[in-house]
Amino acid sequence: MNWKDKHNVFFIGIGGIGMSALAYHMLSIGKAVYGYDRIPSLLTDQLISKGVHVVFDQSVSTIPDSCNTVENTLVIYTPAIPLEHPQLNYFKDNGFQVCKRSLVLGYLSHETFCIAVGGTHGKTTTSTLLAHLLMTNNSSFTAFLGGISENYQSNYLNNGSELMLVEADEFDRSFLTLDADMACVTSVDADHLDIYHSENDLMSSFSAFVAKVNDRNNLFHHFDLSFQGMTYGVEVAANFVSEVNKIAQGVFEFNLIHPNGMIKDLKATLPGRHNLANTTAACAMALKLGCDEGAIRKGLESFSGVQRRFSYQIKSGHVTYIDDYAHHPSEIDAIFNAVSEMYPNSIVAVVFQPHLFSRTRDFANDFASSLAKFDRVFLLPIYPAREKQIEGITSEWLLDMIENAHKKLIQKSEIAMSFIESEASVCLTLGAGDIGLEVKSIVSHLNNHYELG
Image: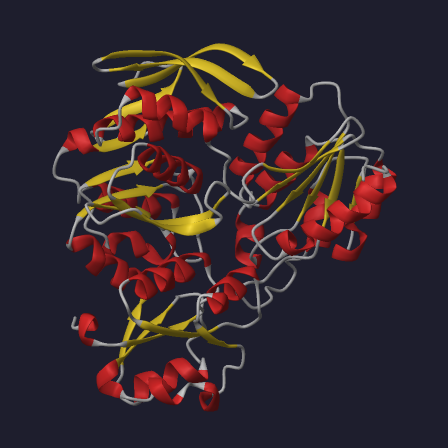
């Protein structure tokens, strides 16, 4: 692949979280970056502010003239782009070098020591925390993250080139292109069944992913997974163990037991035991990568989290509002457990936007069971993303399955008022679609209602 000889890079789907990180990298190495996305967003706004030419019309006529030279233009696309996309087909039909994002990341991973963090849940938090620990240690690394770090307001960090840290995406088997020297698997739960035929098929893909790591001491995985590597967990028998001393206002004070000893009295600011497990994984890899105890301690206490991962939007005596990317039953369960632990006597209302018709269909019973645990349940219409409607699979259908007396189907414009009328003191918005775009408006309405200023 001779992509290094290309001066121009055109991204189809440049506003995606993974695509935008790669676009930033291309900018950092001196490429002229262009791209298309369906609608403007904060990510495209930030790219434009860096000098990237972004178009929002998929017609071929919007392709910049400078990207019409076959010998000088690389085209990168995301698998979320439909196969009939006019620009994609124009580039393919006219002999351009056209690559999936995962293939380009794969080539980059061949050139340096690559740390790949995968898993159906927890990979974004784990990889972003690890990046922060490496940054606190002033390690030489470049990171491609699957979320926006609150510390750096970016999904791309460049502090040198000795290491490459990448969130390894199992969707479309993308992570199998990576040449991982160190890897972590946080979890393997059935998901993406539109891609994988079964849970066994998904597990086989993860087995192929971890098989790329030659040194088993460089493979880290949650203790309940059966890979041959270094295990981690919270108060379990494992190679790296977090031993909880105290929980105060969602902050865990704990000891980290590792093969060479113990680091005492650490603090993890992310709520929920699932996040303490992610913290344990990040610390384990950081130690292996040479981070000292002081950097780990300082990094944990200064970590601000990831946007849309248990992100506090309002925290007052009247109401607490949290936004999260959770889109799988296991993730919803983890959120419920964390909120129940932190706010045991509160009325909790959840607004959930189902993501994908196929996922809603495949996990309907689990979604119904997970959502029914909350005191108030509000469902938005299903966000289709890359899919077409599946007959009979609707939010109304899912709502009927939820055994809860306080449930309702609403539209996005009704979210804030639904929270207010529910009299809940803890409010949650969950989902991987476009529900995150409503957060600013919801915050404004709740602040006005409760006179929070």
